[in-house]
Amino acid sequence: MAEVQRTLAIIKPDAAGRSGVAGQILTRIEESGLEIVALKKIRLTEEDARGFYAVHKERPFYGDLVKFMTSGPVVVAILEGENAIARWRDLMGPTDSTQAEPGTIRGDFGTDIERNASHGSDASETARVETGYFFNATEILGAVEAT
Ligand code: CMP
Image (cartoon, rainbow, N blue to C red; front, side):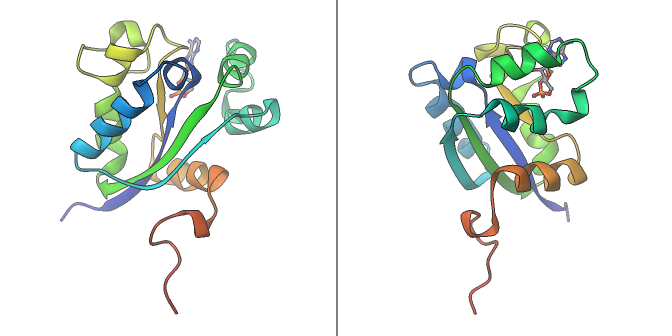
């Protein structure tokens, strides 16, 4: 049986700032069978965005990426299901929105490689770190066992 995983999803400011788009993306997630086990809409501070993307701090696009990610609200969610990491990445399409097929989230709502509508964790360990960056156990459905 496939492994049940959790992954972090971010609906980025380019998508979250457009009327109705966050709702459409959340609907696609639910219709795909992934379960949303945590959800909130927040505005990232510069420190939040710098910390989240710290692995990219030497890359030439880091400054612009931080500016973009703090330019408006984002919706962050934890998705759960069998192979959730790969399934969410498939729903999003490739990082560069110009290469993403219509029908994918980046193909339909993204603009380019930076303004790409959404983020997803790339592996189990990253997912663990990224979900913990935004949510504590009391905010995640099923994470705190009843005593
Ligand atoms: P994301 O999946 O959130 O992970 C890192 C982000 O950096 C990526 O989506 C893009 O928004 C951005 N990014 C990655 N590569 C580039 C690039 N070459 N130029 C500009 N932005 C990039």
